[in-house]
Length: 93
Image 1 (cartoon, rainbow, N blue to C red):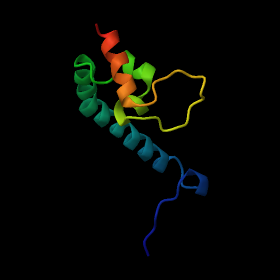
Image 2: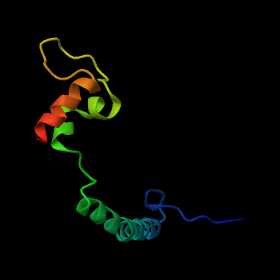
Image 3: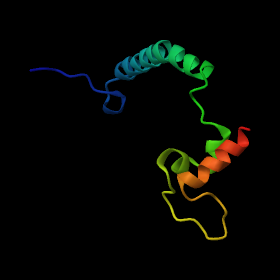
């Protein structure tokens, strides 16, 4: 018979939880080492954030050409990408 170690809740002690904590720390260190420089470079290249104009208009309209949800008639947001383009050109002038 194979004897498998039990976890803390089944009387096996702290050994398995200790192994899982070590594994979690190894994963955090690995992700920090590999992805830290990538996100640092993306931040320096200004690729992590969208422009203020796109944020105000909403990504539905600036990236996809229209709203994903219906809006209230009293709101005066651009409804289509063609309506958004004059706003974008006006703010960059």
